[in-house]
Length: 115
Length: 114
Image 1 (tube, rainbow over the protein chains, first blue to last red):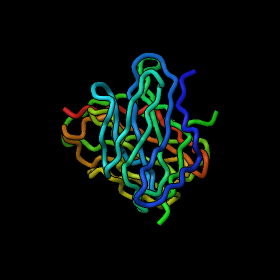
Image 2 (image 1 turned 45 degrees about the vertical axis):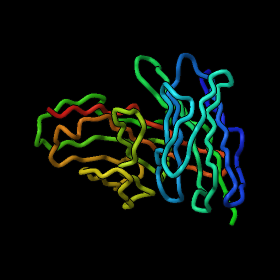
Image 3 (image 1 turned 120 degrees about the vertical axis):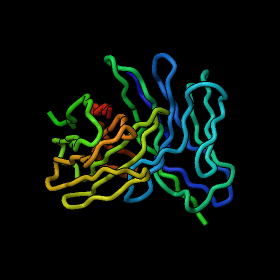
Image 4 (image 1 turned 30 degrees about the vertical axis):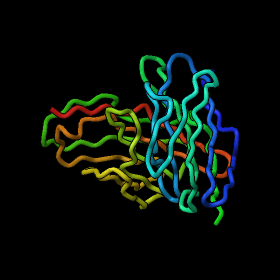
């Protein structure tokens, strides 16, 4: 079955330190990969995506993600965390199913940046 | 069966027409969302609701409006359709919490305004 895994329920990091939020996937073919962030009392907000090309993609708010095909991973990173980065982060993959496309989301990782 | 339903699946309509995209869910979720899927394929939030009589605008500027009179129903209305409204519209409902989520997406409505 096709799936997306975010192995950490919560990640704590000190402000100013680098952060990594992990995502691995199991899908057939070449997936399109996405990261979204959800702040309290808001919907999903798009951060970045990988479709093809350079394995390191840059997105909003200083976030970047590295696509690793051999490890089937798409980890989200930021060189220096801010307290305002504290939110819920979702990894997602777009797959083709029954003649249409659908999104598979990970279970989410809560990022807490400590001042 | 608990699910989320969107109608119509496809719609081609002339400029200036008023349209309503329907979304209903049978899971009893308080939180519902409308997303627009642009050519780059990522989702952009246009409206959301945290319960009956609660509606908020999202991140993407939109000329649409929504209503939430009943928990299960969250329709999106375009008063005067324009070609720039041509897009895929996805409705979702769900609950999020520590360690998990319950997002469910509808099948989407592909709107073409000619």
